Length: 330
Ligand code: UT7
Image (cartoon, rainbow, N blue to C red; front, top):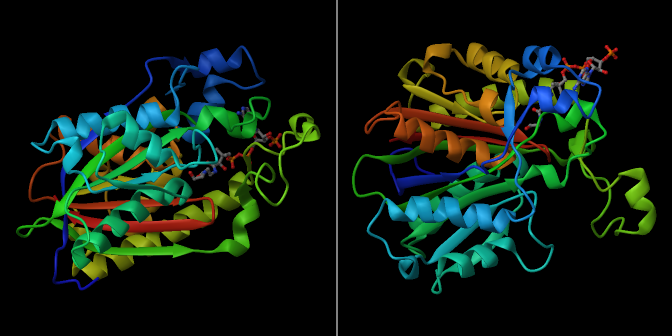
């Protein structure tokens, strides 16, 4: 995108977090882990776990209605719904269509986007493209994740990290100086097997043996993911800022993907942004994959931390590998 033209503005945000809280102490009772280990290595203290009555679509719909309710837009005026999720309700049809039905956005085109933890930022950039080309006016970008449905609850190295939740935002054509001012995205499929679900798709379809091996659940090589996450998020941050004509000194608020406090601190340090300018809520929700950034935006806005006119930098990294950063004048 041309650094001088601002096409897309986030006009509202919303979120939904399942009410049920699972603390580290709760996990100590079911697997060989400890509150100390989880807090020291990740910063996470608790996470939300959705019950059987809350699917990805239901959480996404509630976050969407929260965002729509802060505007004067009627759901029937929405012409595009982009849903980022790694945990669709069903593999067919897209969960975005379920959200469309739940919120009554009968005139919208709806589809899912598979960008793992970076999916919300991919969705924002896609919305920007639609607005730039004039093919949509009112776009709902949603990220909803029921990570508890795909983690291996016997694998302590992954199950303690994730949580469930959803965030959403309404995006419209920018009328002035506020909106997306720069971005950078990247992917590297050669590293896919460092964070993936080996089976359950077309490569190795579901079969009864898989239930015993657990190969349909999330596998992660944590240390390699950590190293790549910091490197790629720092690089994406620098490129998105350069694209926006800004330096790290110009950033008023960094909203990073919330996977691990140590990843957040390293990224901020190498990107040259002090921690007092970083929004952190990983201690309360864990890693909600692509939902972390819109949930954080909505909380920061509600808390008065995120204010009109601020230069915001958002950045994420996850499975794919896929990463990205989007700079926004709020
Ligand atoms: O959203 C993007 C995707 N995900 C991420 O960004 C996550 C990236 N990775 C990480 O955040 C970190 O690598 C982890 C938090 C996953 C792990 O931290 P680490 O410092 O890399 O620990 P480790 O995997 O090297 O494990 C250290 C030790 C091991 O024991 P030994 O071999 O030293 O005896 C593990 O078995 O900690 C043990 N361990 C645990 N102990 C208690 C692993 N998980 C746990 C646990 N409780 N839950």
